[in-house]
Length: 203
Image 1 (cartoon, one colour):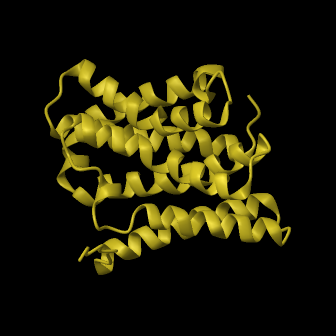
Image 2 (cartoon, rainbow, N blue to C red):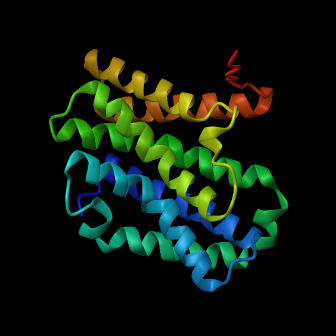
């Protein structure tokens, strides 16, 4: 496997999303197989949907065992550290935030690579970032974060626009990736800290 920055982002995003899924499964008292399923769904759900939509098959995680190893490695880590992780809700939010930042950029790059438009790339970046979490929350009987008033998908959208803008300006690609991820993470964390929201009050 080519260990470029974007592939490292892919594996890191897979791992941190797996952790967020496992933490929810433990909190909901799922059995062992429930934990495994939620870890996989959270980690690869968004990327699988993205790859199918853009016609990139076989989907990314099927082409390398590294993704499966990353997900499975999260299980014992979360098991032995479950008390410490579950004690602080912020830990889950941190892993989820890291995941959406990493997968937003990954989704944009994979979409642009197959020759689709920047607009579609932004959409697929958001799909990559949020749909694993949507599946996680639905399976654990929670309202998905993206459907709440929290600043969630908007953070991904801002990061996606940052990536496209810097790409247009021919900024070094690895620096662009880091900056775009940082934008997503920063906006999401600030929104949690200051309780920002995007309400929609229909009349």
